[in-house]
Length: 213
Image (cartoon, rainbow, N blue to C red):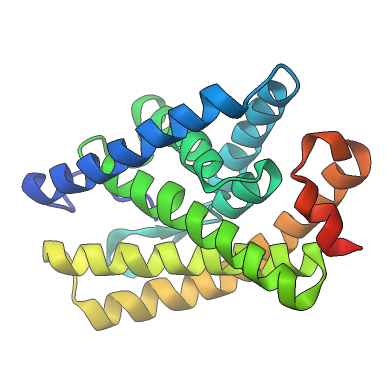
């Protein structure tokens, strides 16, 4: 899902950068008001964990790749979609500038897909599902699956707009791969949230415990 440079024309890439920067500014505002000495190490651990999860890339047709995202995990644990924007931006900057995983000119699109779309879909899907299912862990698993699939479909649409590959084949390729990968992400997300909730319930969003009661 990491879009390389040259896959999106610069004018379109600039639009994605502008959108991403707006959400990043809001994420920084969230971080300034919500983060404390207890949660800063958790941010670091989540960022490192998401970086590791994303390092397992599976090639998808037409030059892109499939992998776990981690946006739902960050948003659910810290109780805000802006947490996902904040953490995914840090991860993508390190990946792009140091490891060459994902382009620089298109990083705005990558932040938009994985951080913004992944975080908001993951968080609000979790909030809605837990009201219905009354189980935070099942809700987080389904939300993480959606937060893996929907950004992949958004990526395919962006590639189509850019003229990189046709819309329908792109949606099929990205959708099928990430629907499968999303199952793994759902399980991993639920397990990590369960471990954190059991070990340090004071560090995770309180709604998780309410939903799983």
